[in-house]
Image (tube, rainbow, N blue to C red; front, side):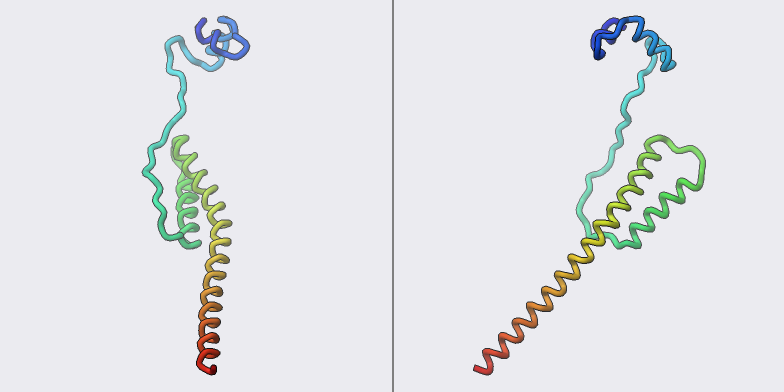
Length: 124
């Protein structure tokens, strides 16, 4: 415990470290909580999912929370992440739809300009 006391900010005393261990309910030689890690496969770019697909995913997450029962902290964090990502996805999807519409209009304008240019060349 002396080593722990020395490594803490403001060099805590042995008694302070011992008191904190008692407050946390840890026993000497007990397990100290560590950061949980999740293993997930790499994310590969795919076709953008529809707004309906995003809502279906959100709906499934909500249903899982509504079922009750025991959830681990990792499962709760995962469901929270899904809700946050769907909210962000919705905002980005709006921009994506506008961009796709602009691209479509640009293609139509380019086709119209080409057609008008061909008409002009034929007349001369």
